[in-house]
Image 1 (cartoon, rainbow, N blue to C red):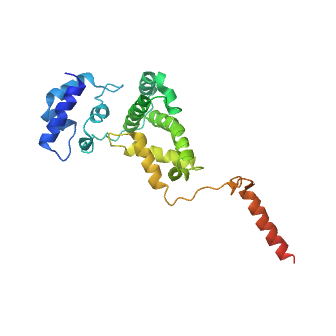
Image 2 (cartoon, rainbow, N blue to C red):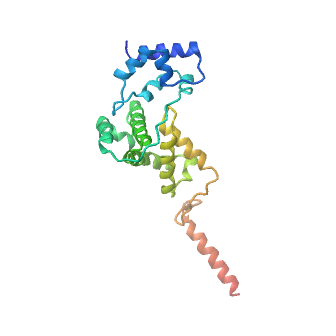
Length: 225
């Protein structure tokens, strides 16, 4: 039996029992053969069961019922070797953060980010920095493309803080980028955009500073009349 076979059985078991929530311990208790298969064959780069890969293959309603174990609060640490395992695995796919060439790139993109996020949640500071580095390319593109995200233009430090917050809070087994996008979208509501005096106005012949100069000149001429 392969992964697809075990996922099919697990879907059927969840449909039959209809648990409000389920977790690794629930799977171990109700489907020990699947748990053993996952333990032997579905691993992260650091040797743990890759629950993100498993649960993302479940039927959508069951994904929302997944309860991931929480990492115990641990001291921050720096371990580059953990990150190198992930980067080596995806070394031929790193272009995907600049340009998506095919549909599969988005899948690999999310898998790499989630792997780094999980390390960051364990306390690896270097993993958190790595997520920020790669995600920044994508966020800059969002700011240029999407009006609901554009208000973050000029707030680089705050954007990085939002990414760190998403790393800490991410629990869902779906797309980390989707989670980050919604977080930036919702938190941008009511946020005043930063305006530049070099912004083009109306038909593009004038910039914002032209109108500021004209207004000041009008005030000066009025005072001296």
